[in-house]
Structure formats: C-alpha cells, structure tokens
Image (cartoon, rainbow, N blue to C red; front, side, top):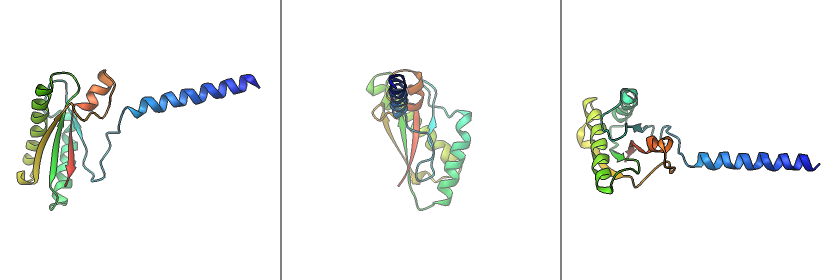
Length: 141
C-alpha cells in the first residue's frame, strides 16, 4: 500500500511540474480575431520566409474584415537595453506593417506600437523562451 501511495505522489508531482513548466508559455495559435503572430531571429526585424504565409493569411483576414483596423505590436526578448528593445520592436512592427501593405492592406488601417521587452509571452531566460518573445502581434480593433 505504501508503494502505491508513493507512486501516486510521484505521478501527481510530475504532472504538477509539467503543467507549471508549460504555464510559462502561451500558444502561438490564432487569436480570437483569426490573426496570427510572427517571430523574428535574434536582433533582426526582417520577415522570415517561414512566416510569409502567416502574413498572407493575416492580409486575407484584413481584406475580408475591411471595417477593422489592426494594431501591429513589436516585441523583443529580454536581452538588450530598454531603449534598444523599444527601437527594435518598432522596426519589427513596421516591417510587418509594410509587408501587409505590400499585400494590399490599406496603410491607414494599420498602426504600430513597440513594447520592447515589456510584454513577454514566456518568462524563462533561455532560447526556448526568447524566440517566443521576438515577435509581432496583430490586434484587431
């Protein structure tokens, strides 16, 4: 009986650790509006080829919801000074905005804001979290 209880405690503790570890991350799935985020390489603001289809889908969503405005938020990981990350977040937001404009979304429907490192989606201090925080979010308004 004691062995069975011990295994139960081990299983419960293991599940708790697994859930806690996963709680550090938010999913990168579609938001309630259908718009998806994109991610950037370290210290970069250029659009990665793997996210071009995401931006094409976001542009299609914008075209089918022509009365909605979209705020493009630029985000960074925790590395770098606050000032540097605000500037990098701004470059990322503008890069994503310009890509949407090239795809036919009217520029006056898009606004940009940089949050630098202030709104992380993952909070550990290693590459598994940093890549999640180097992103552009698209918020329908």
